[in-house]
Length: 242
Image (cartoon, rainbow, N blue to C red):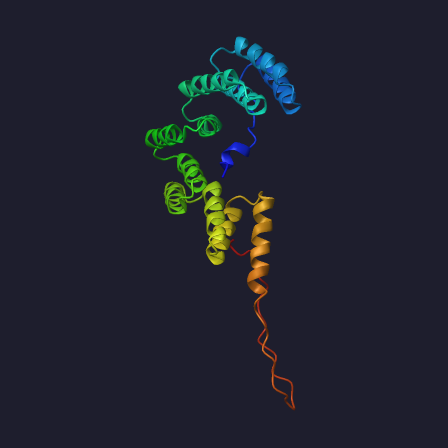
């Protein structure tokens, strides 16, 4: 089975730091990348790097562009360049999550899964208060069929940050796949309460709620000479925690 990492699109980070000219070069590089003009994107990212040497976002942009080229054209030199730029990015900013993810994806695509796991474990050890490494480790474990390890990694991520929407959604997806709909719904609802701007998660919650309520049937009342007493009035529902 192909690893899910292999089909994930790589998003290019738009530089938001200082330096208007460097920002312009990165912005133009992003546009060209999105248009499929990778050579043009590389040229603009290189110009940005000349204006702001050592900027980790620009190193990531270059790595992501060469990575995409390696996937499309199968050129080993592109994969080597991508790995070099990812390492340059992480040497300057080990907390660069997109770059950590990009490098792990690249290693898995090259059948170097053990290196990817080692890299992510090193990231987790260096940043014990960051849930992101555990989320990525969970993704790798799930793709290798180790659902128990994936669940454990996500539980570790949530223990580090109980308000991590990414970890909650990932755990909800894992539990939905295993058939544990109530717990999946609880995880999705919690993630949505923390970050309401997740339309896909909102759809999941609505779908699971509809499925859960679909099995409820109202019992038929026996015939009666008088209608049953009306139930007591209920207060209007408030904003329930999701």
